[in-house]
Length: 272
Image (tube, rainbow, N blue to C red; front, top):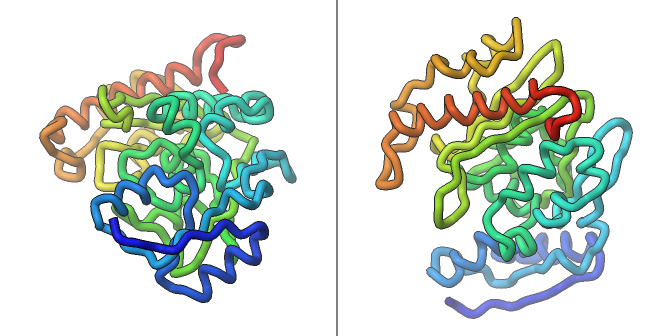
């Protein structure tokens, strides 16, 4: 690990000033990805600008019919939030199954979204629900935000401030966890309402993506069996020592079926 400076500004404007003054500085959220890359010398920032000094960035609130989650909200706080559990319980359940207890207590939703790991859980929830990412400069719909492997539409120095989830739809997520890392080898999020459903996949491909074929099948009726024969070209999926692409394609079908089944569970169940 190479040497670097460290600062913990107490205001958002000070954070933005530090990042603007030094293009080699990097924001530090939970550090779940950044710190390992530092140890492996894959990243060498001149300064880490810790975002934890601004409590406002960790707030969770309802605003104009949307659930707004601050970028510094940890996975554990999203999972435990009474507001999230009331308004979008499917998202709270997703957060409860991220990594392990240590990761959930340090990792943040903003860090996960900005890093766009191809096996992360939150990007699927954002893409399926039609959420938006709010930065210090603009608001981006999830469809435009995630652009590729570990890549987003963020510009140099641009900082994620919060994520806004619409509340006029329901959400369910199912994933096949890697037994060691807890990352999704295939995770599927289904979200929407009676008029339209969106389906997003993580873990199986080089980045999060929508499963349009299944969305079309669900337009007539929300039926878990619709996922059994959905078209998923294996050539578009990852094939590695964990699992070949054909196996991942089948995992996607199974996880999609489980998420749909959760949404159509009898009234009084935990789907939401």
